[in-house]
Amino acid sequence: MVGQRQNLVLLIFSVVLLFQASNGQNITLLLAKHPSLSTFNHYLTLTHLAPDINRRTTITVLALDNAAMSSVLARSPSVLTVKNILSLHVLLDYFDAKKLHEIGNGTALAATMFQATGVAPEASGFVNITDFKGGKVGFGPADNGGILDSFFVKSVEEIPYNISVIQISKALPSADAEAPTPGPSNLNIIDIMSAHGCKVFADTLLANPDAMGTYEDNVNGGLTVFCPLDDPFKAFLPKYKNLTASKKESFLEFFGVPMYQSMSMLKSNNGLMNTLATNGGSKFDFTVQNEGEGVTLKTRINTVKITGTLVDEVPVAIYTINKVLLPNELFNASAISLVPAPAPAPGPEEAADAPKGSKPKSKTKSKSKAAAADAADSPADSPDDEPADQAADDENAAMFFGAHRFTAVVLSLLLVFFLL
Image 1 (cartoon, one colour):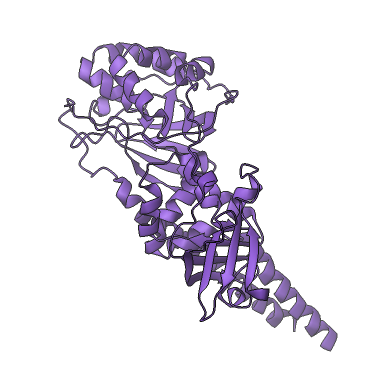
Image 2 (cartoon, helix red, strand yellow):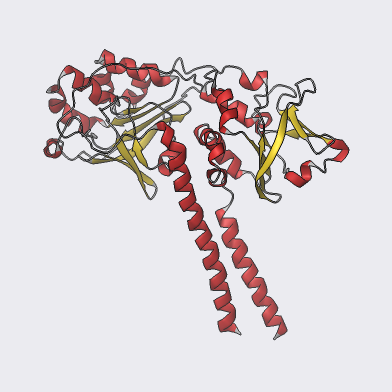
């Protein structure tokens, strides 16, 4: 009887551990509970550092609050430069508040994700951690001449020996991490789309200098393009040709988003998304929604599906869609009948040798766009709302995972009850 009970206890323990391990760590969920770190959290996602952090089993994140991140972004670094800077703030070792004050000989040298990239020369990818008298803990790059002018503020989250999130007072200075990264100067989005099933859309865009200029102005700072495949766009051309010049420009710009959105970001950031055509009262937005492993784009007029990925590398992503997405501002519900069902979409193809690198470039557009009488009533999604929306989604996900842990425990206890 005793042996049976021991086996049952071991079974309960194994089930609980199984559910906990399956959830893993998620830096985005952990930081979502702390609004003061929302900008830092956003850039961990934007730079693709979040998935890299989640894959690690022992790690410490030196988080920066929104004010400290404003200083990092003040010089408009490229997305890849921001990634290098934040990589220097991810230590490949576990340091919680207790361990920081128990450092042997008062000083430790920790490798970072910046060092692991192979980009950091010599010692620039290591961080010096020193426990000063009086309980003060300083941080500084190993190649900073011994200067440690960023200090421990507080422990944010701790999952012992797995992940620790610590807030420090300011960004760690590093000339190597902050060095400008090359922009995608030889990235030709027209050639990429033309070679992978979107030639009709690409040719139409190229023939409109104003719209094409808007796309080019956003390549360095971040751009996501949803290009309709050839068959559906060719069928739509007669309707397109009936638009006025200003509406043609707005229509073509509607298929571009002025920020980089990876597929994982599209799946996690459901909701309204502004486009290159968004301008004041002319919302020109659409709703992103994931359906299982797929992603759809929706307006009040119709819904399209993402069918393939041509480029997905900071700062540009290009996806194919199976139909022509119709903006509310230019069409009404009857317009959908003008777009015949598309032929079966070809399988996704990968664009070759897409270069890396970017340098954000802001553009202020002052032009009027004609809008139809049935313009959308819902407000356009503002970039400023993104951290809050992300936090809400992450909180719901955290509740979901928590419920599953609770269910695992309850099922285990019921199992004991029936077996005894």
